[in-house]
Image (cartoon, rainbow, N blue to C red; front, side, top):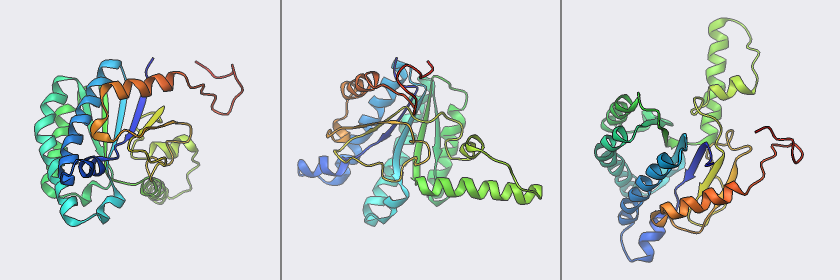
Length: 236
């Protein structure tokens, strides 16, 4: 069985291009092909949720021309790919500080979310202008606002708090894949990754193929997930 929820940090586009003496833009463009392959493979394998870290809140610190390129690529990808998502039964959501994105991009995001809202084969979440610390803070602020509105303290637990996170509609990821050789989570889904299996590969994102994804699934299948319990005590 594949993981129910797969999260991916797509790293290495720039290094892929540099190694080939190409502009970084070429790496980002080639990375879109890896996104398409990953979505299609997850849908075929019965993965229910796929979450992609497309643009972090820290990525705004990159050179302005590269940020502009990434935004244009996001726009063109939405225009080109949303029809394919509809055909393949993929529901798309974008989470993060979406208000910081350009108006035209926000409009395309709303349209894509509306067009795919009835699909249920695969739940695709794109994290854009997203950070795990921001996510936790915004969930806490939402609970505070609710307490003020209700004029009383809220007795909340982990489940209630998690429901206020950007991915409150999804189960926690079972498998995190990070390409590009780095072995850190880089402020991604800090709350949700508490018991996630972490798979790191040296493969740069533009080279991440369906075969690479299947290798990650195979590694995951061999993991023994105990969630703090002893061997044999994990519920199925």
